[in-house]
Length: 254
Image (tube, rainbow, N blue to C red; front, side, top):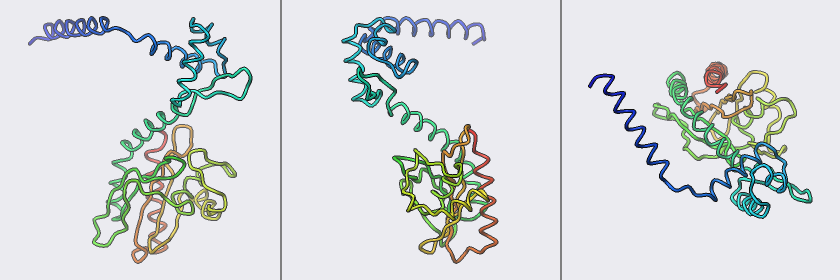
């Protein structure tokens, strides 16, 4: 088939698809809800009267839409009287989920390479529900190895959390990873901030973690090397620390 013929066929397919889409009956209520949501995104905090003017919908309809979107997590009312509306947490959760998927895909090669170069298990840990949770694993090929599973929760006093907080400015708190101050290891966080990776040891396992940063320089995940204590030494801690830091830096900024 020639390129000219291919072009004609593609045009006909696109035309038929467009005709099919245009013949589908639109759901007006969904379109109205989208209008209200987009107006809140552009004008927040914003009241019902202004939303009605902006969208051309009646006030009672806008109010019902706003309340429905609030119940679904898309909008959040302020404490003002009359009530004004802000974007809810749902859009942030979806954005974080999409960003996490991209981070996992971008990090997959680096995780495997880091596991190969260290001979140890490597984890990618990310914020979920205010905690750091394992989202990807490259298992060690060693006969005796430290293991973790996707879904495991990292402790607040460990290398993962310390690396996360160490990547934040001094004194800053984290909305994505919430940990009581008395459960954080201030010395470990300070050391992570100074050298670019955190180290902890518990239950005969040493963890070495470095934060992955997003385009704004905020932590988005943590790479962690797990190794049995009997295989670790001060020299290997330093070696692994530099490797995990370099790997984290290689996938940062996305």
